[in-house]
Length: 267
Image (cartoon, rainbow, N blue to C red; front, side, top):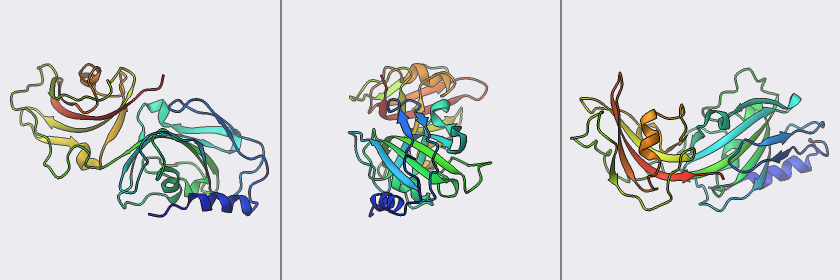
């Protein structure tokens, strides 16, 4: 797939629709909520994309599931709109031919993991998946700062096989069990973890949820309230590449089978 974002930047500059000195200043480390200073000038009407920092990870490609934190604010008054940094769960963007805004495609595809990218765009062209712009007039200008965590194949760790099977002898009251030992980085408390999972009800062990069926990998922050409580003890200390069976007792007993694809920490 051909990428058009350099031409987009050139068009925004050459048309002169944005006043001089209208580039917001973004500070803060990748992976943390950005601090954005918006100038007093008018932003212009053409979307603009700026790469603020380049990561060293794998480049995202068409067909990937791209996981990214996104901070969105309105240009007028520098008013915050929403930020996935607050909710501890990055957004998931599936680039498998589904309808995705071209501004998001140009911002996220072809970028190395670990990159921070800024998009300035009218709201009508800046809406992304799972990011409804309720209450924002289409002509309002938005500033979006993406922290690209990575791109992953939708079937990562599956590749043509059927869904992983919950161990037959595991009950909701049992301890978590490591089914496959990984050899990658260790998962620590408070880190983001990229996973594929299968959730089965008990006692029939029927699959009631699965990241494979929902479009591919998801990312979560391992903090209380951000993931099921049973995940915290089960995943901390595991290594990337592991498969962990995680019983979850309660009013609705569940058993999760979790494949750890990646972990991301920000010191």
